Image (cartoon, rainbow, N blue to C red; front, side):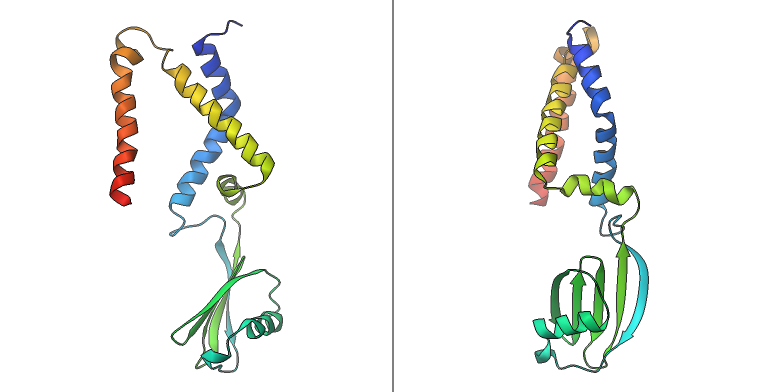
Length: 180
């Protein structure tokens, strides 16, 4: 095989095709996670009732006791009292309780099979994945660089492609500055 821009571009793109597709889907899912989050879909909603509690009594010990009483086997993320509502967030559960009445809801979340795991690719911070992602980033640069030299003639990068590439660079920058 001859080492050309076309061959390099094609072979690296083939190698990373699965990851490109997974990153594309997971990126779309994460962009819309306020509406639908594949790592947290509601699997079960349960009405709960506890004895009314004064908001000054809500502390780490109360949360630990509540967690044990409700038999929640999950890691606590945070809790907060807003007005008369206690919100407890665990990794796979959310709890909302009206402190005055003691009534509330316990929501259990599950990961959507396959789609939920794909989103983990965007947020994983393990060392091996960071190194692999760095290699992937370099490969994407090679694909972009070699792609500029594949087409010759009227539709080449020199004649036409640079304008599209510039527009493709300016477009996200406009959003970046408008949204920040």
